[in-house]
Length: 330
Image (cartoon, rainbow, N blue to C red; front, top):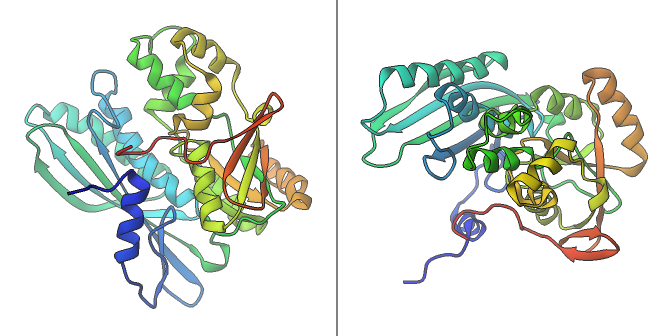
């Protein structure tokens, strides 16, 4: 029996089989599902699974940081739509090797991130796994319906922006795999992999500005995540390589690891920065507003164009990079 192709095909098949509900505003296909809870309020729901050996390696991922990451990557989905996280569910499938000291540290990290964003753990499940451990988290958030930002609103002529340096988490992972995580100078890269920070405050500022047309978080790499926005919005995008924000330390790490800093930025994944589009005439206004409210700088990396596909312009050459980021089952 033939099996589906990559992760996108599996999701597409599931999405095709699922119906809809009157109170459901957004189902499969965005960072969160969204449903109405009042005349002008909506709830957001997202879930994510982390598998030992695929998403984390216990050889270098301390339990406290793993707990923080398990919470953060889910809260990032709430931030990607401009919402506030409220409640979380945690399911743990752990092997017999896990002891109480490990669990206490993991939970300390998990609960600390929830507390930092005003969210509360309200339940979950615990089971024994015979092989790899699995962490599954669901986060519920809320916001005003009028402020909701989805992947579907990108318009031709929009400017594509990101909220920070790209490729750092992928570099941190490469350094961990080489056993160089504790070497001097790599702290920011390793932290980007072990302990990412969800951009909740920035997401709220972008949502309340009313200027952002489409948005999502950068979990699978710029090439794939921008392609998601373009597919849902029925447009294409052109990214300029020279405009992609790369930290100086990223290039040094790329030389050490024998890899490309640009490839990390385009397809490395797990940056958990925000990716969004804004009308060209509103970029300066939004940048000034965000700088005033959060002290953050925004980076314009490209523009929305007609026709399908995401393209990279580099050294005078243009090539398609659609969905070149990480994808399960591929």
